[in-house]
Image 1 (tube, rainbow, N blue to C red):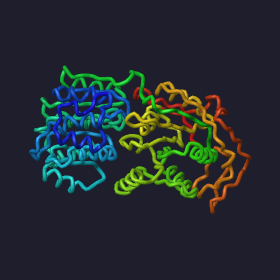
Image 2 (tube, rainbow, N blue to C red):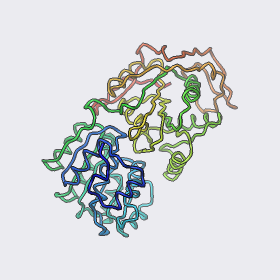
Image 3 (cartoon, rainbow, N blue to C red):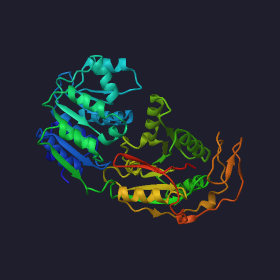
Image 4 (cartoon, rainbow, N blue to C red):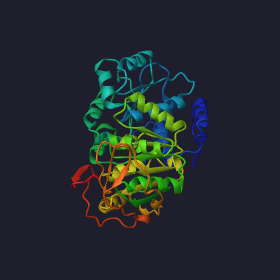
Length: 436
């Protein structure tokens, strides 16, 4: 791999990269940055964790002039991703006169208006808030030179496609456009054809069918109900993760798993969409700085770029195989090794096979000593919790209604009779997922 110092970059930008401990370029950076510096439009399909953020920010920071008006706009699908991209941009501009403004919903629009009034060359934000600011006259795109769509496929999934088209129509036609996406569904491909220059460069980083980095190992264990909590403790005991994200399917479940780990004196914090933006930011900051585990919904499956995440644990297996790809992409960032561990219900063999086919990975059964934790107490839950034949009572005591069967090694999953729903190619296929 080439090094950043081989590019003809400004001294202060090279120093900023050095301060960030970025010396060698990743493949996407090595291939994309020179193309953008040449002034060409670019469409990049690259798996998560490959270094896309730096790939589009470095040429922007290199090229914008400190003129106190927006010259580059970066559109991202979520507030968390906006914060992440903004953090990288702030580090890259360093002590230069270039300013970065971040705009997203859930925060004071007046504060964001004031930031734009003070002057910013680079604007990073979510589609809805960007349109709000344009409607107010606080954000004007008539001098935009760089237009970036990041995580374009997620913006499609979240229903932002019309907003994106509207924003693109307000920017100058001679702008330089960049589109980055882990997958390339048809509507995103149409945007690249209809709203970008005809000679734009198209890059696919890695094999066409390779959606996850090769440095991630993929393991599974068959568990449902109370057995999942024993399996979680057994996994932590066996592999001793340095830093990990534990994904759940609902906000309520994430709170429940958080209380359970606290009860076991395991360092953890929770983050989900039911929390205020300030609460989420505090949780994320704590996780980045010192907390060992983050329990979250799919809110954390994109936009988190924390280099030292060693493990991704799917306490609840995702219904959508592409969500699996983005979840596990939080690990093994920038060429590091990582582990992905998923608990599948005994009826979810079909879902596991769908994930293996879509992500082009092989799930390996993990042997866990769950018997060691079968009598562990679980904290209060307000609802009955099936799947293990048990129930929760006030006081946190667990009472068996029938004896749980433990299946070390994860070999005793069901025979694919389960029903689930997932997306493939942007189309939802309902197979009647039953939650446990």
